[in-house]
Amino acid sequence: MNTSQIQELQNIFGKEEVLTAPEDLLVYGYDASPVEVAPEVVVFAKTTEQVSELLKFAYREEVPVTPRGQGSGLSGGSIPHKAGIVLSMDKMNKILHIDPENRLITVEAGLTTSEIDPAIAKFNLFYPPDPGSVSFSSIGGNVAENAGGLRGLKYGVTKNYVKEMKVVLPQGDIVTIGSKCVKHVAGFNMESVFVGAEGLLGVVTEITLALMPIPAHRESALAIFTTLRDAAQCVSDIIAAGVTPSTLEFIDNKAINAIQDFKDCGLPRDAEAVLIIECDGEEHSAKAEMAKVEKMTEKNNVQKFKIAQSAGERDNLFEGRRVCLNALASVRPNLILEDATVLRSQLPEIVEGVSKLAEKYKLDIGLFGHAGDGNMHPTFLYDAKDKDETARVHEAVKELFQLAIDLGGTISGEHGIGLEKKPFLADQIGNEGIALLQAVKKTLDPKNLLNPGKMFDMPQDTVQAA
Ligand SMILES: Cc1cc2nc3c(=O)[nH]c(=O)nc-3n(C[C@H](O)[C@H](O)[C@H](O)COP(=O)(O)OP(=O)(O)OC[C@H]3O[C@@H](n4cnc5c(N)ncnc54)[C@H](O)[C@@H]3O)c2cc1C
Image (cartoon, rainbow, N blue to C red):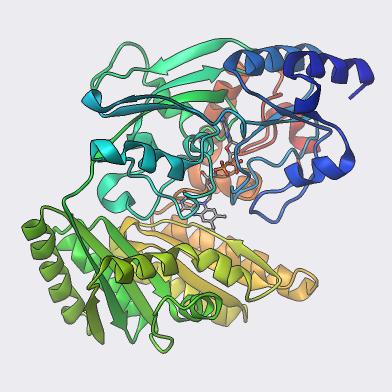
């Protein structure tokens, strides 16, 4: 970008909110995926109007803009792979309004998700979607990826809580999408288009979220299994029995040992797999649900079933699950974490499929995930310097996606497509599906400047794709 363009950005944001020094830019060139490309400029927005000014400028000057929350994405969505400007939402991080009467909160998009709960606890309310990254990802990033979390089975994912959004469209227009009302059918259901759009259709600057009353009681347990299949079948059986735990997480032996090496969370190193289960609600109903869960674990040859006896014990279990990815990341120099998702009844098949891939390609694969949602995270551990191993990882990933599709599942349950899964999207939704996405993108962003080249290529830029 030239000096007068930089000057114009400084006029919009203020000099100190525009970074151009190469050493400052590096930090904004990666996320939690293996891709890395530094931007030319980083700007920090503090208002919706600044975002609008920026997008008008970028449109006129034909410069790509990549919105960025906290860069914790696992699919490369916030990587500025066509260079240009990174728009950091980091400084739009205020809670704007709490409305306990209507169980709503309005926040700026850069707010860290875990900052919501402490602000509303005094009203006995909580915000259910809790991705493993809750303490460092932004709510805007959660909206853009339609993030799920550990409570998704009972409480759903981000899209179930987004009521209203302020969005700046690619050419700078500011629109309000959705409504704070419980019911709203005035116009298309545009919330569904913008939630999960991965920053391709607009920049979300403010969001009104629905809240839930804090459940009176939480009953948490650890179920220990000697085979992967028993643990996976148990998940299917719990769902089939009509029980809906708030949490039903799966961790395999490799991941258990990585966690224990990383931080002692009391997980049994010799278990082939464990399930972390939580039922919540009124005390009697949470306990009754957990009793049904225990029966299902017995049916599936559980080795040990332990109910947490204190909040400390429960927190330890959940901490184990939350540090799982970081723990696996310390096992080998590189990792690729996938989030193939299947129907819950197909869980044993995908778990077995991952074991077969590890054997066939001689790979280290840790397996954990939101099993109750059918959303598993096979985590491929490797050394990128080893070309042969890297090639085997990529082959195995390709086969994993095909397996998920063949089982009637999806290549991504919550991490989005971004750059990482772009080559596989057509296998999932077909060329007609891609054409529909391209048509929506073209209508809102005819010059393809907002987060270009993510999720799918536009017909004119196929040759330049990363
Ligand atoms: C340890 C770990 C655990 C994780 N656990 C989970 C999990 O349990 N569930 C889950 O779903 N994900 C999980 N993730 C993935 C990641 O945290 C989520 O995708 C999260 O929603 C990304 O938020 P972010 O603020 O970091 O966004 P970024 O990574 O900065 O951006 C993600 C995408 O959103 C776009 N974007 C960001 N902000 C905006 C905005 N305001 N307007 C428009 N577009 C925007 C970006 O352009 C990009 O395409 C995990 C990641 C890590 C590292």
